[in-house]
Structures are given as C-alpha cells and as structure tokens.
Length: 272
Ligand SMILES: O=C(O)[C@H](O)[C@@H](O)[C@H](O)[C@H](O)COP(=O)(O)O
Image 1 (tube, helix red, strand yellow):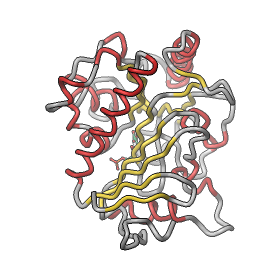
Image 2 (image 1 turned 135 degrees about the vertical axis):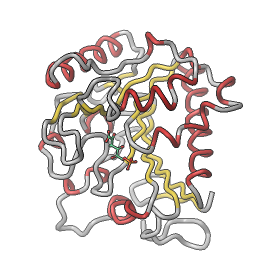
Image 3 (image 1 turned 90 degrees about the horizontal axis):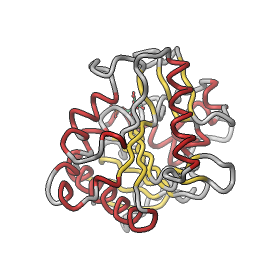
Image 4 (image 1 turned 60 degrees about the vertical axis):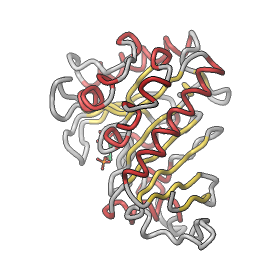
C-alpha cells in the first residue's frame, strides 16, 4: 500500500501505487469481512454497484479466495441498477454475473437482482419489498437507530461528478429519508432510468467501501475527503454524503485518484 490514513470525519483511506495493488487489497478486505460476518451472523450480505469496481473485485475469483471464502453464505444485492434487460451490455447484473458471480459458488437463490420485466417504478417497489422480507427474518441486519436495513458491506464506485450508486449531484433522490430504494428517470449518466439505494440505507451499512481509480476522479475525491468550503451545498457531491452512522467507511484509491490529496511522509493524509 502506498499509504494509509484517516480523514477528519473518521473514514479510512487506503491509497495504492496501481489498480492491481488496489484490487489485491480490496479482495483481502472483502474476504476478511465475509469471514467475520459468517462467523458472527452465519451469513454475509453485500451490495454491489456497477462500473470499474466489478473488475477490481476479480481477485476474489482466484486462489485462495475462490476456495477459502464461504460463498454459500453470501447474499448479493445491488446498490444500484440500470433499468435495462439483464442481458443488455449496460446491465450491472450482467457485468457482475460475467466477471464475478459466474466464477464463484454463490447460490442462485441468494442473488437478489432487480426485475427487468417491470417498469422502473414497480421494479424499485418489488426490490424494496424483497429486502423488507429479508430484514424481517434478519438475513439482512437492521439498524437500531432507524429500522433501515444494515447491509454487512456496500461497495460503491464514484463518478468524476462525485455520484455514488445512482445518486447524482443535486438530485431530489438525495433528500429521501423514508424510502430504502428509489428510482430515477433522468440520470445524467446513461442510461437514464435507474434504481438505487437511498442515503439512509447506504449510511446504515456496517461497512461501506468507495473504490475510485484514475485521474478523472481526483478532484471529486479531494472534495469528498478533504472537504468543500462552507458555502458549498453538500448535495453537489453525493460521495460526501456517505457517512455511515455506526458503520465504517473505507476509501480505496489509486495514486492518480488520490493525487489532489496531501499525504504526509508518515503516511497520514494531511489534507484531511
Ligand atoms: O451503474 C453505475 O453507473 C454505477 O453504479 C455508478 O455509481 C458507478 O459505480 C460509478 O459511475 C463509477 O463508475 P466507474 O468506476 O466505471 O467510473
């Protein structure tokens, strides 16, 4: 690891020389959480996003993790999905299926993909209903503060505009407090129709990881971690609104994405 540190708001920063090193550590981090939660709760609930994150999870399909991780205890969800057919090139399900899910032995009945045969509104409602059933039986944990689902791990990418999941800057979806899942029809990143976890769900997770690589993410990473000036509206940068209430946030960055942050000689991140 090139360096690690802690931000002012308590999130952990892991910064790597290359995306390969990042992927190695990300694999180990996920495998370790899986082991801990399987021991503690008998299962591991993890929500995926789309984008480059999925290819960076590739190490999990290789030795030793392909054999050592207890895949049958995994329950897989999506923090966001694009409203397209499951075999469409834009589908986050297809992305994860091709690069990850088809290569490890997760049970099909534990994969909670979003219905691609319904309207985006109905699919969001059905997805939230499915999550509610799993919260009732405590397959998914529950936050004691607000009765929200508490996923063991939510994995997020971040766009150059600071969006996470399908929560985009200044979008009204950022203000939702009651819904667990919502839909949007005006995503600035195509395709326009998407389903997404809301901030209360993301912030109720036990662990959230934000994975960002590449120079085009550097400005948003800096604003999200090192801060914006007082007059800036938080909703201009959704990644900054990711602040798990009782859980832990870890940033996985390559050196290009971290290039606008000041990192001290001792490895601590100065600008935070
Ligand atoms: O479905 C999506 O579009 C995503 O879930 C989205 O939030 C993604 O994770 C970021 O846009 C980062 O994507 P990259 O890592 O590919 O830049």
